[in-house]
Image 1: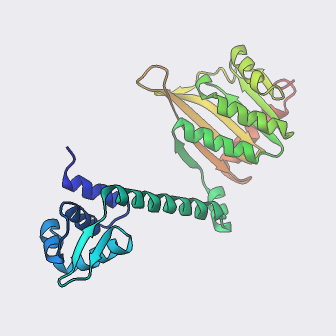
Image 2 (image 1 turned 30 degrees about the vertical axis):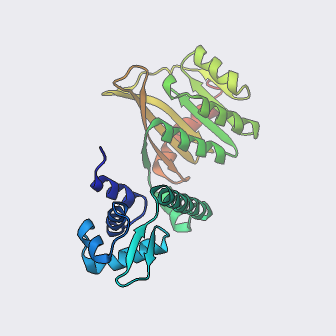
Amino acid sequence: MPTEEQAVQLLVELGLTEYEARCFVALSRVSTATASEVATLSDVPRSRVYDAVDRLHRRGLVDIQQSEPREYRAISKAAALESLKERYNTTLEAADDALSELRRSKAGDDLEEGGAWAITDHDHVTDQVGRFLEEATEEVYALLADESALDRQFLEQLAAASERGVDTRIEVSSEEVEARVQDVTPETTVVVTDLADDPASLNVKRLGRIVMVDRRSVLLAAVADRTRPGQIEETAIWASGPDHGLVVGLRHVLGARIDSQTVFA
């Protein structure tokens, strides 16, 4: 059964201060109470009760009776939760709008291009690959060494880049994977190569995929089997910028494969 302390902590998570939450919970247990009674019920110092209930009043969560001494009354649970919900949603929407309006500063651009970034979780890796593909203007190259790294979202993003006129090329490990890629993005050049079939691994991790966009953004991902059958975990490092060491190295190696007449004949 939920305790009073749990109720306080949940209200704090919804945006109340601890004293506000304790005062509101205390008032919810009685019909009305004076500041002194609230202090006794809530274990909030009496000197802090006045400020706490005044803030609750401004939030519309507590009514005040102008008597001597003042009496306080919490609004109904349903009305309080609805008020907190509206305020919470409004705050989320405002945060979303504010973050959407942000523009990365020049210093931020320099920082992003100055280092390699590590990310975990398959969905996060796929999201980063998606951002690369959305920004592609000329060329996309991918090496798919592990079929588990190939999902529908990646293929659809690749197809969208191809439809914009971006030159998309992929090396895969088998004809089955080739057919899956071509089924979603027929404009993409797909070849089956020994490089994609290389079972290179380190401990429990193995190469999953490599993506290079416009020869200035690269991502290397590794995959590993989870304890549950059929589940895969994926981690990656990525970098962007023509002068980043990781980009320069892979651009030299992969660029030679892209330009080779033997790989993509």
